[in-house]
Structure formats: C-alpha cells, structure tokens
Length: 187
Length: 158
Image (cartoon, rainbow over all chains, first blue to last red; front, side, top):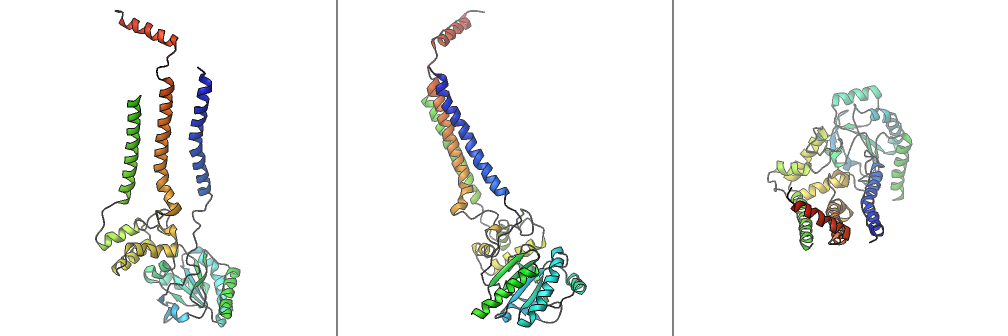
C-alpha cells in the first residue's frame, strides 16, 4: 500500500475541479463588472428614421419628417426638467443659427413634460427652432429613446446618420451636420 | 457495490429529469388570450428603458405605461407578439429583452446549469466509485484482528 502516491492525484484533481469553475466565474464576473450598465447600445444608426408628424406647441402647424426629406434634420428629444438639456441648449442654438440658412432643420421633441414647463424653458433660454409634443411618446419609442437628451441627425435620404445619448457638444453636432450635408453633395 | 452504483445512477437521472423539467416548465406557460394579457406578457419580457432592471410591466414610469400602450396598439392592429418584440429590439437592441433570445451564444446561460449539474454528478459519482473501489474489502490484517476483537467484546455479556 502506498497511500500517499494514491491520494495525491485525486486530491490535486478535486482542487482543480473546484478551482476551475471558480476561476471561470471570476473571469465572467470581472468582464461583466467592467462594463458600464448605463452605457447603452447604439441602434438605428444607418436605418431609416421612423416617420412622425407631430403638432408644434411653440407656433401653429405640424412637423412632418416626410416633408423634410432631402434636408438634413436634427431631432432632439428633450424636457424642461432635464439638466443636461439645459447644458446642451447653447450648442443647439449655435448650430441652428449657423446651419438654418443651409436648409438644416432642428426639431425639439418634448419627452415626458408639460407644454407649460417647456414654454417656460424656451422663454428663459431662448431659441426659435420648432418644438413639437409627442403624444403617448410614440415617436420617442419609435426612435428607441432611453433617456434624454437624445439627438439624432437624419441625412437627406431619410436615414439616421448619427445618434448621441446625453448632452451634445457643438463640435460633435457641427461635424455630424457637415458630414450629412456632404452626403447629399456626393449623391 | 453495484447497488451503490445503481443508486448513484438513479440520483443522476433524477437530477437530470428535475433540471430538464424546470427548464421546460419555465418556457411553458398558459397562453394568454385577451389583448391585455398578451400585452402584459410581452411587457414583462421587455426592459423599461428609464429604470434599473425593471420590466415594462412592473415599472410605474410614464414611459413604461406608454410602451404598454404601444404594445396594445400593435396587437390590436393584428401584429403577432414576435413582431411586437422585434419592433422594440430593432429600436433598442437585444438590450431591451430581459431574457436573451435562445439561439447562438445566448444559449449559454440555459445550457451551463444543465451541463454543470450533469458534470458535477458525473465527477461526484466517479470520486465515490473510486473511493469504494480502493477501500472495498481491503482492511489490513491489523484492522481485521481489531474488528474481530471488538466483535468478540460485543458478544461477551456485559
């Protein structure tokens, strides 16, 4: 009888049997915890923008995406209660001022807010781009909006060429508008 | 020893049956009939985008309510539950599904527990069998004489 020689291997093996799944689990956990749960996948980029026809509340009329085919459209989902919306307001206003003459349309789609609150926001911070309400959040759902602000740049061919979740900055917006404008010149 | 082996095998089979039954039971539920029930069923499988780990059905948020309305509208328009789910997946990605679709690499979460139970049972069975085989009837002569001594001790009137 050589008990040592016989017992060593199974013991080593059972340690491995316990450690291997633990190691695997730890690796999975590490890779999972490394991800930011708030970081969201970017869908719809390159896809046709969902159609909408929504009533304006800053003025008479409606905004219909179909009518704007052939133009670059920036759709901005926002609300008066949203702090980052306040932060990005200046960038939106500057881009609107710079590109409106070139046929670029900026539309603010109100998300989970009251018209009164939105108008107070507009009066406080200014701006004169069209603002629309989104009854039942149907446009927001169709655009896959997670949380506002969310901004979509729609190319003249009606496809979504860029999307940003969170406050946009002027550099990003102008770059994306320029590239959408270029796409029409090339076509 | 064969009896022990048999009962181990039986235990393994029992584990497998229970595991598979649980797997199938989780997939099979009563088919809801009304639009409300079907909408609720779809909503409970969709992640509420503005919440942390809440389904659209469970969330009290306004957006979740509006998503439920959207689901009902689409069902009323005659769209199948699969098409409604696809509508949300197209917009929000697979992320919107609380349980990933059961295909490809996504099958891993369903297969790993079953494989784990089967592999664990097999390893345990082989370890036990190994021990039984190495110990079986191999008492040393000193052990044997001790057993005989103690048996004699039991038989003697106290």
